Length: 235
Image: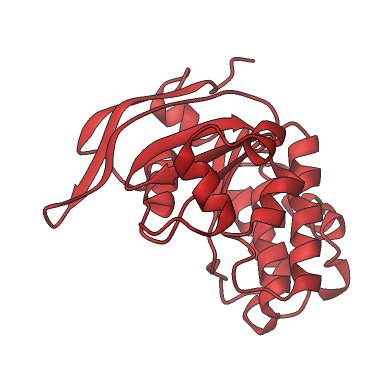
């Protein structure tokens, strides 16, 4: 079966209200370990994910998957910091998109997905009554059940306590180990150390640095990256 990756962005730009948010960005995403995107508030991290996922249309440059866009969209998924829960049970939240995708045995597959994220006992509970951490795990189960080639995650642990964060990180690592390419934004440097195969630093809508995680943290490739890791970068 043909693969959607690599994904190539060339001269990618996005402006809104006369403000350039992403500017002249070149990026190559290939299969492999997770890519973690770091950067200060306002750097454009969330906008970049939405551009890559196709929720926003670039105002400059090109974005090319290795498959036609319509096919590539079916090979990817995205989970947001505050995931949208349907007014249904946890099980129905996972089964519904599987049915839309025409997957046979959607309910059985949904139950297996809940089991993988430790929510099997809550299958019949209304999704909107789950805790924040449980909702995030449910959103990951819903995405994982579709077996995406690429999964975009926008700060999935930003509002969670340490225990819930650890649970989500374990799920993200398992998704990556299953062969899905994870592309994730975070403010948590420890999280980036734990999860990343490579790290990308975004500043003012441009890629300032990119390196394997071990290299990025041991020997930052740019002065700005070193300042960011020290907490000294004011942008």
